[in-house]
Length: 467
Image 1 (cartoon, helix red, strand yellow):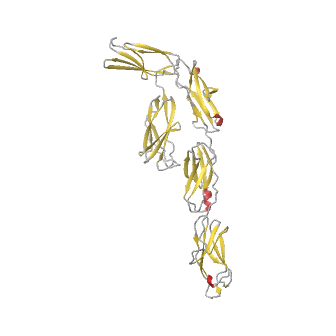
Image 2: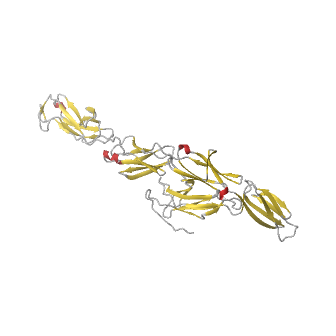
Image 3: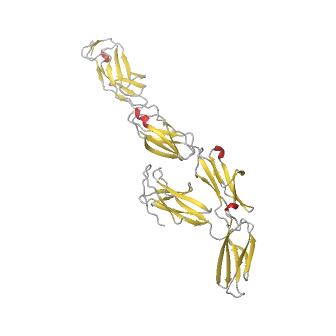
């Protein structure tokens, strides 16, 4: 069937939702199928990821808006395929594509059980009895040859399933005839959901997809579940709650007419739900300067996707697969110290999502331009020999603040002090006419940015008075 082209815009990353197509949804064991992942409206370079039953098996890079890969199916049953993509220049991945379910079936043929005796006849019709040779092969292994028709008889065992070929050669002429032989198929143990977290209910199902119904009915097949090679429970369906104690290696066995088949091993390792993340600053946060925020969940099976939110809106998302458990976000700046409380973090692992508390961390606000003032009201006179205070103050700035005083024309400060308030004082003792001139002050704090005041004149016209 032809599928209609469908393009959707992903709400979280801005990327399209890719489209997956397979050339066939029904295949035989051992066959390969081409799967194509496409995003018609995108331009490269793109990285495509292909998944089979939620497990990634192929990553391909392409400058085109589509690519394909070949998928080989060795096990009968069902397989779900989907794909994702991302731009090579950006970390975000798209949403998952549509899911294509592929049914893997055994090729039709003679179905027997172990212990049966099978006869394969290679009959040559319409030829004289002389001048030709007949061969019987199994997977390129010669089983028998004869100058005439023959019958090959053998007892079926676990390795008997396969494609048998009878070939007759006479001169330069060659004729081939084939026959397929299949046994009672190996049981398949599957888990639903395919990914499970501790505390979730899960179901294990054991089934045999192919049965020689002329010899064995479904009622004849008995199933038993094993954990770490120990019998656990009889039946073909098993329900329990996932926990750390339920983790282990599981198999199931199907028994019919004294014949037992064992499934492949299924490893169950229940994931740990993600815990509420903690958000904190990396180093100092200074108003107007870049800084970093770290988000981390102490518990939760990787990968974990961390989303930084600002004013409860998604700001950026990073997915962590290990070895570190934390995500670090780069922030350009904030304009005010109170903006720091607008940041929160969301951690998502599987179907579980948790939010952090609002960020609460110290913020350093740079000092504003300081103001230098005298200890006397403007216009008031003071006499020579008086102590005069020079006050330096800032309207904004995180304490402690370092203040320093200069006399214009001098490169060395007159005085430096570090204050836990936003004002500092320098006293000129027993002022004289030699102290007359222009003065200014400066201020800085841990933000590392120095601000200087405008100069102020100290002294007046009278030799014995100061204004």
